Image (cartoon, rainbow, N blue to C red; front, side, top):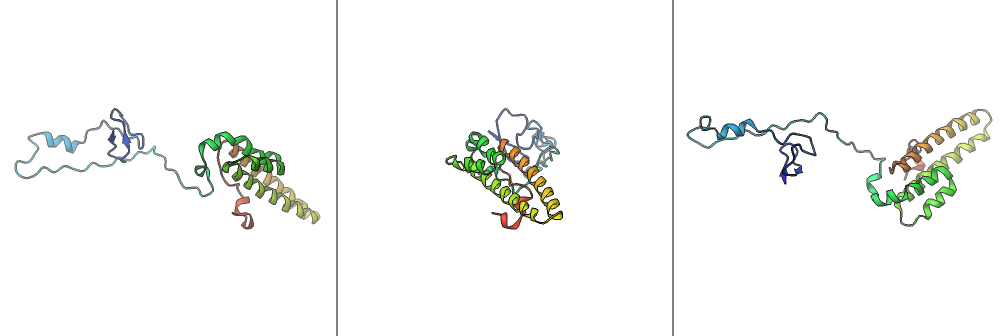
Length: 177
């Protein structure tokens, strides 16, 4: 194994490019070449090597931290085995929440059941607005349409094996946690 001079990643001895940053490992440092040449080396005193200048890779992608993405907290095997059960709460409502909670030892399913409970509470509160004629009906209708869109987004995330908090609903104060 050798080390990439640019980013310090361990790479195979026969690798031509670094897997971490993409820099070519076959480039020769011109400062090191000059040291081997007898004419360029000073006759008296130690030989000083120039430090390697790190090369920037414009194609390197940096991952940003997303506090609403909890996918890395779950076991890959749990996610792969329980994607379908984790999507049940978004499709079947309260019955789906019960199904997801019945899956034994699946933190991934419990996470999505918790998100679905938040959506159910938001839907219930929006339905309470229907008590108010006209304005309440309009606000409830728009709110329920937003909850349906959020439910679809959460369903797609569950089927893709992601554990993202439900947008909009997770930012409401008493539904946090």
